[in-house]
Length: 255
Ligand code: ADP
Ligand code: MN
Image 1 (cartoon, protein in one colour):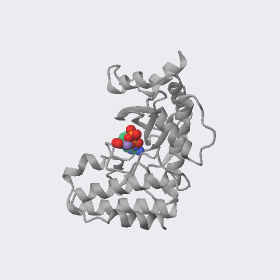
Image 2: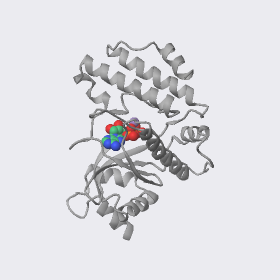
Image 3: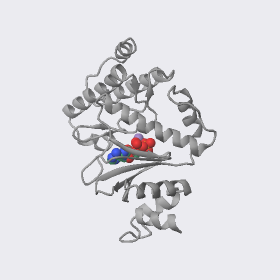
């Protein structure tokens, strides 16, 4: 059928790709009808020429490496339309004053979640936080700038063994700068800031903005507390002389 052929094209199956590749297996497992139609649409629009690799498989989303019709590298985050995280997603969205009507059906709720991540990326860029440039979203698919060279950039967690004390000090300053700029200038909090969501690149890049929200959200202070605590604890373990948590937290919420 037409869509199936288009998806084979997106996955490069018409040429080099073998049907037992990891990419094909994962696509087969997680691409439902909506996802296929969405990918076909983005393909026709030239936003996704093809996907050529799996960067990450997660509970909520899978991230693929691809190229657009001009040959630029892209990262494509595809949320599962079927997730056990429905409750958590619903709670996070319900607390966000920017989000209006909340669909009752899971698939549509995931679309709202995807759109919110796109908006968060746009907003973070405005406050000079280095994030992947969002390119387009549709339904459960988010297309963004690929961070990396040949290979995707590693996460801080992946390379921590190779880093020096000075590296950690610089990364700590970078991360605290992000938290402060977001909160004070952007009225925003990331909400899942950790060594798993910082890509080591020049300069480092903060990813995974799906749970980020605005100060007006009644959850924002507890998200800020969590980010701050995770970041301070992590870098303290790496030998950085970190700020005092209580002091920093107070300074931020009183700003
Ligand atoms: P989740 O943690 O919810 O599965 P993330 O947005 O953190 O989703 O993405 C999962 C992984 O995919 C990241 O840890 C990172 O390794 C990779 N990744 C995400 N976005 C990009 C990007 N724009 N460029 C390169 N790699 C990315
Ligand atoms: Mn992540």
